[in-house]
Length: 121
Ligand SMILES: [Zn+2]
Image 1 (cartoon, helix red, strand yellow):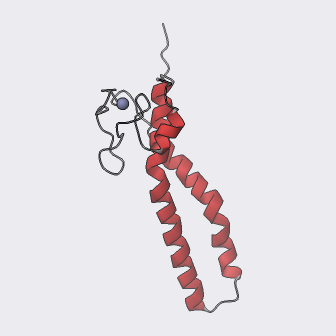
Image 2 (image 1 turned 120 degrees about the horizontal axis):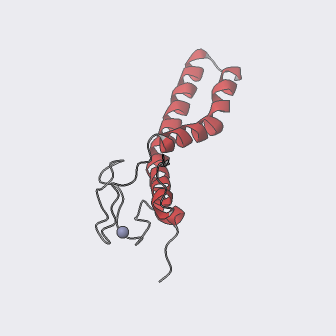
Image 3 (image 1 turned 60 degrees about the vertical axis):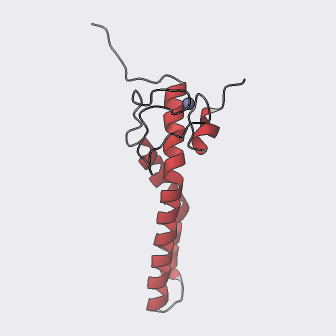
């Protein structure tokens, strides 16, 4: 059986090794280990990486609209409504994309055996 891609399994929020076990126990809390193959997730730590990349992507996608919206010839209530709608859409996008993004980074870290640098004396 071919080893599943860490990116594809991450987008599905599944284990990089077996492609079946779920990575999260809740919204973003990692399970201690894979429920199917027993792969230990505790040795991995994605830190702030997923949040940084997702916020950066959201900035690129939604940032221009926050600057262009005030240029619209709308009354004040229309602008306020536009800002609220834009903010809600952006937050929904962020909350939607954050778990798969974290799972992709986790899977890439585990599949490539990434670890902090160790120096010999
Ligand atoms: Zn697994």
